[in-house]
Image (tube, rainbow, N blue to C red; front, top):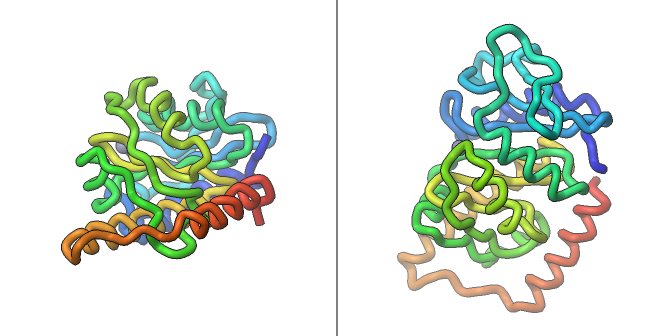
Length: 218
Ligand SMILES: [Zn+2]
């Protein structure tokens, strides 16, 4: 089971970085990390990232029951999405859910993002799939996300946003930013005649490196 050393500090740092990089606004999106004892540290609902402090973070078990939380703090309303990812993938230590504009454009159109930028597949594993629709906050979102995440570091949530997974929060934030940047580029390339695919063998080689790095994170 993959876990993150000093998970609260890593979650808070990634939350601040996510806001600074414009990948979320206000209280939207959420970040979590798995601790050595199997519990999950997750950002609270309805607390602005700019004001968030370490003691605002909530610790829950894999059933979503609170283990520790400051008075007035409750876990993210998308905790079921995070928990579904941890239950399905033993080799991940962190989950980030976000709503960046260009990736969400693809999610609203129910379109995946093709792996057409060199080295994209090293970090993501291949094309980013879009899930079937599940209503926000329900277990459906997590069940659909787990299917779309098979062999990948990210998936689009239909009519909603993105979820990304990986060994630790800083890596998962990097994946989130890369997928958003790729969505922006592919959207622009559509107006220039459409993106041209990379050769299959190139993407397969990159995907092999992704698989290795997922098992042996740096
Ligand atoms: Zn959301």
